[in-house]
Structure formats: C-alpha cells, structure tokens
Image 1 (cartoon, rainbow, N blue to C red):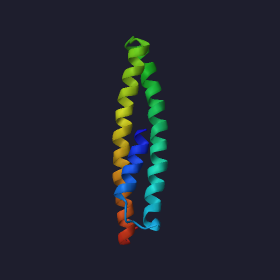
Image 2: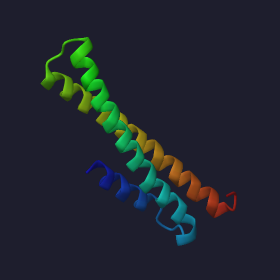
Image 3: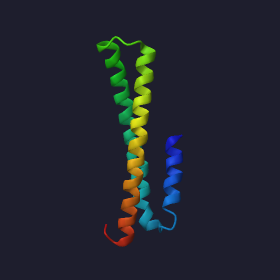
Image 4: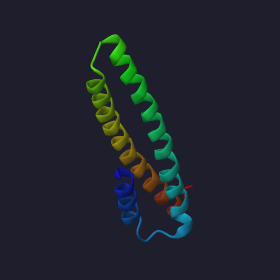
Length: 97
C-alpha cells in the first residue's frame, strides 16, 4: 500500500516530464523497491529468528518488532529512491545523462 502511494506521489512530482525523460526514473522506482522489499523481508526473518534464539523473546514480540522495524526502514529507503529517481529524470531532461 505504501508503494502505491509513493508511486502516485512520484508520478505527480514528475508531471511535465516527457516520456523519454521519465522512463529510466520510473523503471528505477519500480525495480529497486521490489529488490529492497525482498531484502527487508529476508532480513526481518533472520532478525526474528535471531531474537528468538539469542534473547529468548516471545515469538509474537519478536515478529512484531522485526516487522515494524523493517517496515520503517523500507519506507525510508523507498522515499530515498523516489528522490534519486526524480534526480535522474531531471538530469536526463537537462542532458546530463
């Protein structure tokens, strides 16, 4: 759900760019968050298992803290990716890329 709203925000911020300028930015914004989402899911699973074994946390508390923590990290990284994608589109518009 977060990705959908971030994507709409990126499309609104890129209003006025031509298709050739916006295409690499949109591809980056679609591919990179999918990879980041998969990585955060894997790391969340690893941290959940680690906290259950090492610190003897309850399974519910371990899963909840891992999911919340990595969801926040995923959201912050997605916002950074939006900024990078818009920067790439702007550089392409000015002829830098």
